[in-house]
Image (cartoon, rainbow, N blue to C red; front, side, top):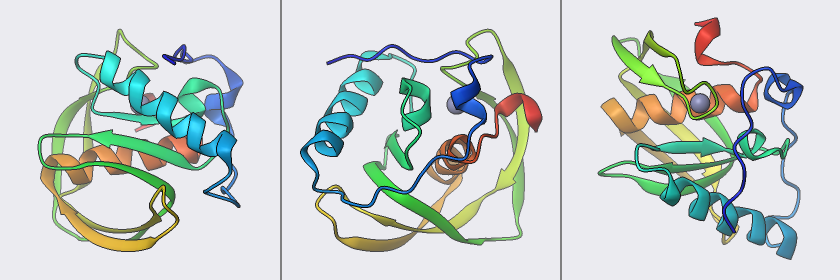
Length: 145
Ligand SMILES: [Zn+2]
């Protein structure tokens, strides 16, 4: 089911999202399916966080050329010092394009939708998208940067 995307101004985008305690819960699995479908329906969408569909939970869906994954309870365990400034957009703030400085390389820990722990290092655009989406889980928006 394609979900409606919450726009800036809605207080859910400012909340600290809660950790998912049971990844295999059918409601969580359904939410993940719906988030993936919603992201797929957005031609220019490369990432979506659960608060953007009105659920204050630590789940993000990422879809870039080299990284398509759902990350549950993601934690950026290392941000490498080399940074880059690039333009970003956000599905919740459609009218805004903003230059943001981010680490070019990060290491992120997360649970997969099957409940497995993974930790991997991402570079460049995929690293940027994950940093943007993790910001959403902490109530931070592009316009704050
Ligand atoms: Zn966003």
